[in-house]
Length: 495
Image 1: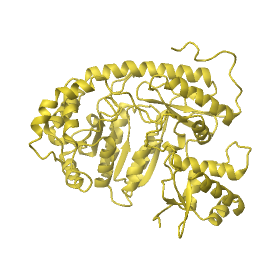
Image 2: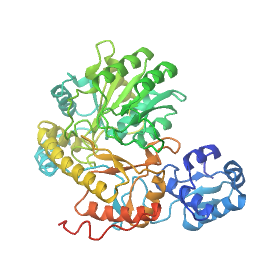
Image 3: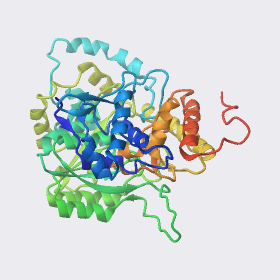
Image 4: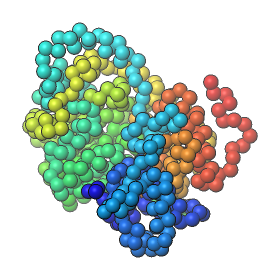
């Protein structure tokens, strides 16, 4: 019997406008929306769904309609009737899910990543002799190797933030760092300030630690949508007043922010607001966890920003913990990240770590230390690749989907696209039937927000972008009733 369940109100919040613009039977619309929630991870597998009667009453529909939707879910393999548990979510054997490598028949737009840095293999070969010398030790160290901690500290110093080795811990990637900080700094029921939208796995880590999320909005430049005459667009970027109020009114234990090339909007926080955030956090005793995994993926940002903790004064410096990794710059398969924080926090993290893991793999640490000693070739290549990818993606979207509003990012790995209608979940579902995985906007929100938005990565494997756009175009026709393109083949001249 499953112990995980989603309440009626929780499911309704995730469903949002589940009827959408569909003209088909209501039970199929409900089936489609629950199916997507399972596919993209907003409802975990092995979760008990609300009883048919309860959901029907809450939605204001007949129980027959809900029963028909549940029957479709069972027939398609998305739920199973478990004795004593009702309908429990499952995944069909071949269905791709968040975090799972899709089969070759799918093009994957769900991950904002880059191909491995070409010099990675050579760097691995260069450290093999050093690795042989490490085999005499245990290979277990909760803090990480001193050589890599020093390399990370030196990298921060080169970026304008003097850092000592005792301020650095090496982790198994950035996600591990988020999870470890949440588990160490939060008690059940504590409040945590988060951006809306934001990285969905950060929400999950904070909730797993028992946090109550306090959202503050981030708006992408040019991504607003309005239909009312005289409507005035909100200012792009962070809601500064909302941030101040969130700290003052809720006294959060932790705040998780991504101030450089924010995922998914691509925005960067102004220097003055960074200093204000640290000031407000320190007054409330809040630790600000800053995700800087995309901070060095600059394409052509007009301003130069220091690491977030550089905007603190000596009295508030202990309020900031920075997270970094090489997953976005070198390769996502190189699972090495780090935390840069006050030494007291680093010691707490180390003391709390052994219940979950015994340290970061030694060989990977040696490779990353080798690369960090001369990191400029990595960043120069990424800048060149990201500029070309951004320009191609934005140009193609403007040509194929003139109804959409795509944000022109100046760094990072994806653009946040306004579809002009609340159909993101429908489009993501339709795209799957055309062989494309793309993440619906609500995946980056809380309780079903951002149905007007879609995140599209700007880096793709050769040929995947062309085929992915074809699939997305076909899906969009079905969702929006969009006519076929004019004569000619959009990609006829692409080699």
